[in-house]
Image (cartoon, rainbow, N blue to C red):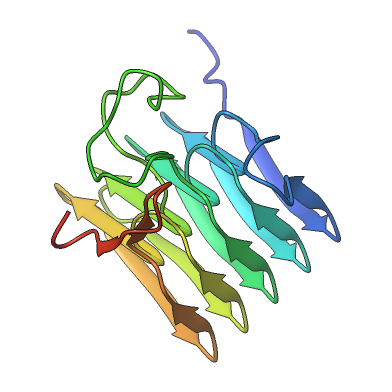
Length: 178
């Protein structure tokens, strides 16, 4: 019989970094921090704290979990997560030069957690004392589908001015009306 392979990332910390750029002219094309877990992989005891995550082309922090992967005890604490996302010209429409990661949709949530499938595992996140502002889409976006289960504690964060699009000419619209 073949031995089953299981990938594990545990007891890890991402702390005190500048991820992205202080200005929109020099930015990462994709997400600031991104985890894509599938099959039987496990991510546990991860702390993301004290980072400046700004001006990335995708989401500030992005977690995608599929199949039977397990995510447990993720701490997102005291980060500045700001000005992430595409739609550089602020018109609410994905332009040809704005699709930085090539997925055909506007990106730019401060924190995005997506969970598909998963059976009995409950994904655990603690989101505390972050400043989540001026991201192109949502401050925090959670999407749970199929039989996935998610447990998220969100508290003492400053979440404001997300989904606000400012065009080059200074016109301001919200994502809901754009």
